[in-house]
Length: 404
Image (cartoon, rainbow, N blue to C red):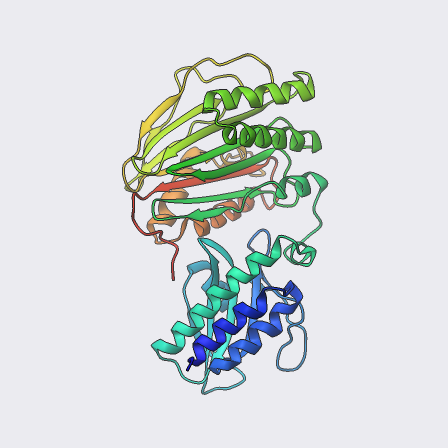
């Protein structure tokens, strides 16, 4: 005979195959009730990860529709920020326990699930955590075809340039037992010329970052051509040098040498930790080790930006990482962000921020979320330029750090 937990999870999985996003609230809540869980609610993170937004159709005990809750300064937000189960008192039943559990897909924080249990022991908590894991996987499987999801996670109107770019960017978190990848990009609703990409083939992790000239729709088109040509080249078996030249040719052909993009294309051997890269007029990558900056990966003669048809100035660069090293890739909007008085955020403050927050035990995605918020505060909420940051930690067969 199946246990309540098995019936809850198996039934939800079976019922989810043909469900839409709008169907998930009653499905998740109904199957949670099999294990005695009540008042089950699901929230997802908005695009900037400032708020947790309830899935449609949810109401409180008075029948009033639920409203977003802040990621900072709330119990659901704490579960999201810290990637851990948060316990509290259930308002509807003072003797019961309210649990908030992060919804995680790999290392991507999708949102949180809240539910009430009559008593709490290891078995009950295990069941709640498995319910949240399954709910996260189901949500992720539905969002790609859901306009409802796309509208739900937007906190403000989106410019056409950002609309184009967000539909091409991969999700900003990935991890396996050898690497942890995280990325963040602002201004989320107005981004124009910044972009990042990554992909895995066997033991190789490819990472690229681009900064296209300008901040308009033409900049977005330049960045998307760079991303498309990069993917086309690497999936066609070209090496980094040839791929960067393909990007150069594609931008030049489209814009008659009138526009360009800087960028870094890099490959990391996830077994050995050997990094190889080509720098096309971009800020050099940084290497953090044991809480300090140990290397700035300068090129003797960086190759020109892509789009001018000027060819390569140097060959492939190489660097040997040590286990636990963190790579930082970034665009100029990170370090050149200026306060109203003209003070730049700066490279030293950028590196110090990453080091201090990760030393405090924060996950890489949460560190980057706070970094972007800090840069926005530095500029009083309005960026003058796109700001993108990518981190890659080489773990060499250690378990990924973003777990419950």
